[in-house]
Image (cartoon, rainbow, N blue to C red; front, side, top):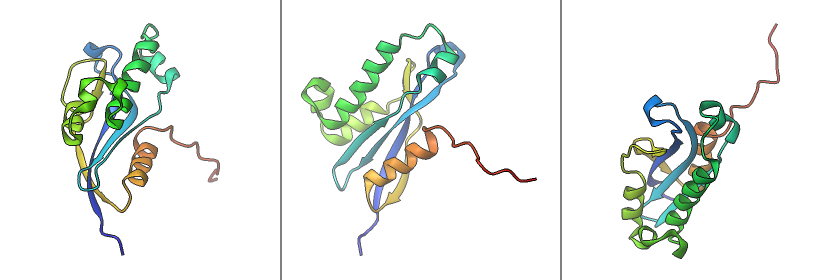
Amino acid sequence: MHAHEVYDYAVVRVVPRVEREEFVNVGVILSCQRTGHLEAAIALDEKRLLALDPNVDLETVRRHLGAIVAICEGAAHGGPIAQLPMRSRYHWLTAKRSSIIQTSPSHMGLCLQPGEALARIMQRMVLPIPVETTFNH
């Protein structure tokens, strides 16, 4: 039997007009220190974002979200932050900031597989809510 692993996660948000404090959840960053797992999943719903601000610069948003993924991966194109130790990268990515890309506060959980936990959190917090196909009369 596998032991449960402790993980931290934060939801990635795009706040197109910071002064309005409206946002769209677009991804999740998950870190499991003991296993060395740091991963970001991104699913940008451009229509929802454009509903908040029709003038948002989508290319800039896509580039910044791609940088989050690269930093989590420790990729060379992720810049100097991507070369930091895993926990430092997580803390840098989830630091409170007042910019177009923000994260929720960090939360903790237990899982058997960090990748599966990431997929569950994405489904619950980011991906569109499925429309009910059954009707009760």
